[in-house]
Image 1 (cartoon, rainbow, N blue to C red):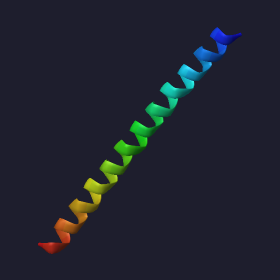
Image 2: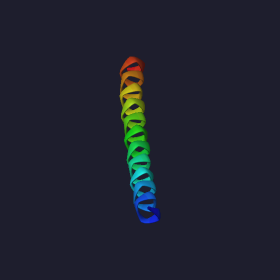
Image 3: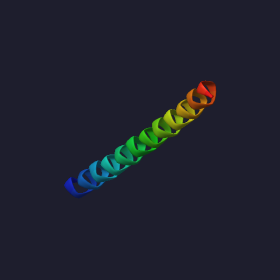
Length: 43
């Protein structure tokens, strides 16, 4: 039972890390798009 619980917790931790990286990447992409729009309006 303890081995199963430890495995489940480890998998949950890995899934949470993957989700955070995905959200962070999306935020950077949105920021780059915003900067591009801002730079095009300044010209």
